[in-house]
Amino acid sequence: MQITVPLYFKQIELYIFYLTLVIYCIGTINFLIYLIKPRPLISFLSFYITVIGFVFHSIIFLFRYFTNACFPVTDLHQSLFFFAWCIIGVFIIFNIKHKIPVLGSFVTPLATVFFISSATLFTQNPVQIPPPLRSIWLPIHTTLAFLGEAFFGFAFCGGIMYLIQENQIKNKKWSQFLHRLPSLQTLDDLNYLCLSFGFLFLTLGIITGSIWAEFAWGSYWSWDPKETWSLVAWLIYAALLHGRLTIGWRGRRAAFFLIIGFAVVLFTFLGVNLLLPGLHSYDSFTSP
Image (cartoon, rainbow, N blue to C red; front, side, top):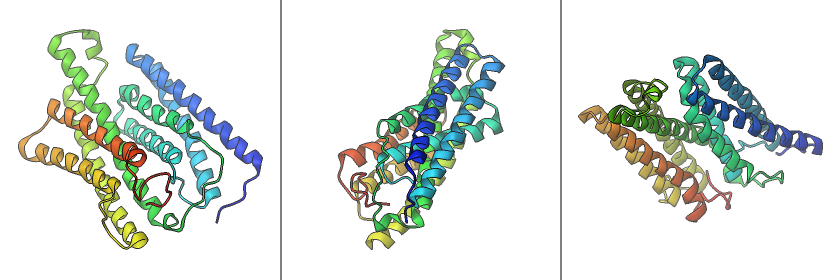
């Protein structure tokens, strides 16, 4: 049951939303400055500005969760909003643990693009939630799936960083830039870690989605376009993980696979929902 929210609360939500957008943009700009001038103070400010944005981001998410009485990922705006939240959350945890602030120069722009994209679709009009979406499987399935995609987005950034660093070493250009990025070994280890977590979460997301589909539609798998392309993405990452563990696919080849895999993830997330009609189309509001 949705809660009737006074209009001024909705206005406050709107102000916090755009405040969060501004904070993320400031954090992203600072991280890009850090990439050019790697100073500890710039790194410190960039990270904690991003953390402040994440706090406001979380407040909006919790507000929507309790006022809608439903996990707020049921339309394209909310999904982009949640995806950006997952990416920033993974980055914050990773940076606290591993202390590689330069990752923010690549990860925060990606998350900010998704947040800006969600802003273009922002609406305060209430969304009618159909019965199939009012299920405990909604937060379970979507959280697992988006966390998997967030780790793949992280790996995508790591792959780009790897190719840039490798190119600098190979061509001996912009030698000062070499010291601003992690070593090739560190980046390769990062990519493997993100690949492993991403594959785990994506697998669990597909499994829980199948269970939910059985409850909602009476079938575990219907070869809906979203299901089919999710399987394609899963197979790409499965092939990369298998190749790495069995025949040593590392470095440049792995980086290219991670970039291609994330392109497929984005098509599954956006292209399929917008271009290929099916049970998971956002405008139908009838899918897990």
